[in-house]
Length: 275
Length: 259
Image 1 (cartoon, one colour):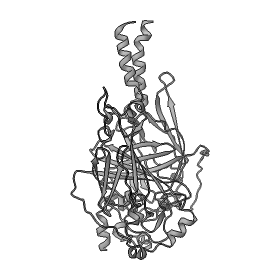
Image 2 (cartoon, each protein chain N blue to C red):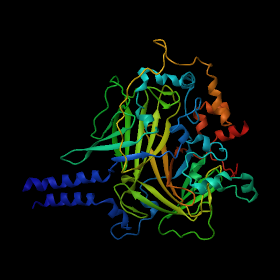
Image 3 (cartoon, rainbow over the protein chains, first blue to last red):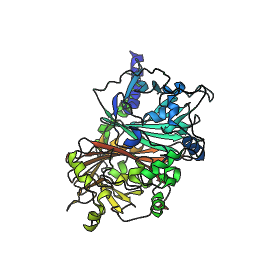
Image 4 (spheres, rainbow over the protein chains, first blue to last red):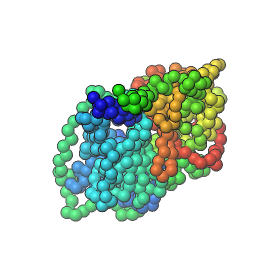
């Protein structure tokens, strides 16, 4: 009798931590109430608006050719953990629960075009610096009140916009998951010492959809384009004349379309008015 | 039963009381004076913040062309009104602030200054359009008179672990939480500068969260849900982020513009 009574306070105290947890599991449908043209049909070539990129990123993007997606090696690449939130995919979040403590020990996030991504909540450390990188990276989460803060490392090289604007494999990602009823908001903060001059922040919203089922998405590789072996589609610097079409079509200064941290701040509007 | 065990169990039980119960009691404990919403704040939202426009850039940093509103779930009537947008008419009628109302002001690029007007009212000033919003917690007098661009905003804290209310007790900032604001009674305005309408019957629900990052940055995250059956065919939600500033050095009040 004595031992169970001693355990009682510990059991009750363990409940306190549980109060600070919220259940994110469910079927979540993307809502494209922001950046619909970029996210659904896809971004236009040369659209780097609002991206805090440096010259190296701009050069990579300017020399990118969409035809690279037809290479067999590229056809089945999933979106990386940072981009996929913004992509046109349904989301399923499931949870792992410890059968004894009944605490949530991990969330799994899975989109239509992605690999399973585990967010560990059990306090495990991140791998060593030279451990393998993956499309989903390595994610650990901790509770900050009702908000879940996730740290992602070990990402393969990806992109911050799917028109060739790169994100390096040295980048790290911080996420804040927020739920209000049937709405999920995810704040993403990408830090990339190679291609970004400032953290890149986006917030994306999903709505709970009880009828949603994510279909299978098997990916088969086919030869889409008949080209000599070893050819990698690209443009040499300064040769892609299509880059000028985006700012011209939308009556934007060409300089603004090139992005850069300055273009993210309200003060830049006064520069726009002078042009 | 061992007396020490009883004491430990009692302490644990008091810690395990759900936040909702503690938050709604409205007393400072031990029969003290009620704790004000300002004192009960589970998160400090005050200070200067700047919007960082990484989303909808082409719809926020410049004025989009008439009829360009692909992200907004307008119904047929909403599209009809948006397609008839005439900024010259707004200027002529003295209504250049239509896109600076509560339905859109947090999307307008600019600086935001959040302060406590009094113990029951949080004040939000914007330099873009020089607007003022008052978030009134329970106990704060309601505004009256004709509808204004910012409408009437009812505020309540949401405490981590459950619980709502404008009053509470205990060390609220240790528990964390967010601010919920429901705004009604606005003048009809625009969801986007190019005349995308919301009606005077629209209801705007907002949640204000704050994050603190390992590099010292802090972000204000504002999630905005708009219900307006007159012009929208479903609930419309956007989330907007602001970076905390150390001071007012970039504060630059400017009047509303219709174009």
